[in-house]
Image (cartoon, rainbow, N blue to C red; front, side):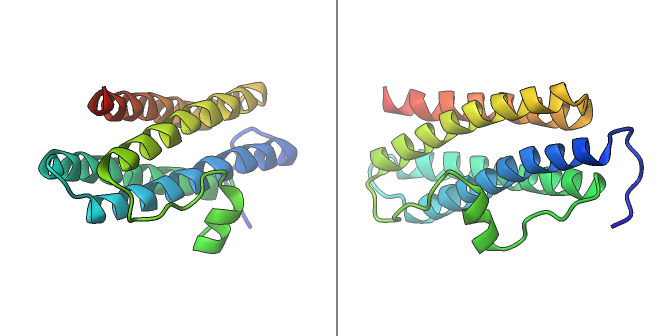
Length: 156
């Protein structure tokens, strides 16, 4: 594939692609899980949980597009199937028939996982001087920390 030169070597672009691919796939699985929970949440806090999950899945969807476009811009193919997303993600699918508190706990844990994953990938990207990808992930890190905090606050 032809790519615009970003000043990184082929090997560095490959490392960037690998880092971004794992974040993209994990974000996709978290998006799908949040969307499913949004559809299936019930109980006395339905309205607030339903709205909270909608806000979060919309933010995650936007992040998926940003990550995939970055992968494309550095000359690689972004994973595009559910099979590929599950292959590259450490996050797993979840049953939709959880109670609301379990849904929130699951999403909180997933966001904390994303924080850990993204911190690791930022280090890789900084090591190869891919500051654009690093910047994208720094923004993602802030969003996941915030989402985790908001979800966790509902559980206190």
